[in-house]
Length: 292
Image (spheres, rainbow, N blue to C red):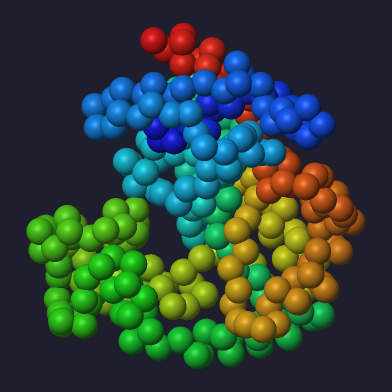
């Protein structure tokens, strides 16, 4: 990240001239070498293209393990997480914002967005029926395939109720996923069944489910937002096609009426529409000098 950030900030914000008549593309005095020398990398720079209109691309990270949270507190601008209930979300939100502050950053400039599923319909009964149909389509073998994929381990070679060894658990690639299963199962060495049932992988139990009429779903989401347990949500589709269309047709107008969702885009970039500030190269260089 030090290497990448140093390259993204080698062009000053106003380095571009774009004067075709006088054949001047940029002011060379405003383009700098990175001259990064670290423990693992050495890079001269400067970067081969000008700065992004966003300053630099939005840094979005999915990480809930201790190591992942420490990394996010230092670098991330939007953090993708999974919380199954409001109380867990409130605790995690508070703890993470404190980590961001301890890392010397402004917590208000780092957003947390839990994944969620939305089952919305014109009536509560229709929404619950839709949810029941979706839940009935999930099979344990689907979960085994998906878990094997994300953890880089063949779950099909172990018995369904056979505990994993410490060595096997240490080899899983997604530590946050593993730790979540250990925590919620209450087992130091969870079984294959624990991973399937606790994770909810391949089912809508994997994420928080907001289900009901547009008003009921908006009430539930607003409760999380106000608590606070999040700065927004990452919407996962329960089914395709149709789910996102239901959200746009039914839920979005209700959220807009409450002032909780935009009626137009804030700007032309992802960063602007996420409500994140545009980082300036000069601020990066000043912070880097102060750290040295």
